[in-house]
Image (cartoon, rainbow, N blue to C red; front, side, top):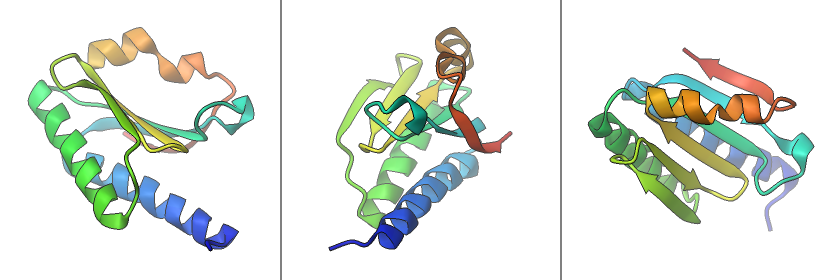
Length: 122
């Protein structure tokens, strides 16, 4: 049985690995947003921007491969690199990949104004 400390370490590892994978492939404006105050379907969002469909596909595949190798299960995936947005749902952690235009349009950080930005990588 996992202890609270192990769960926290596992979460920290998953978010750090996902953000590192995105940064390594030059995604931009990578944000870790704590949305626990809303008591909703997830605890955290990672929101990031990619500049092309090719980059979005590569970042999505890298994140999925990295988290899978760490043992973090992907519950569902929506959208794709051709749609301008994609969502990777890991339960407590939901990762949103956007084109610049779609990120501005959907404005997730603005939609969750009480969310706390934990980490931001320009």
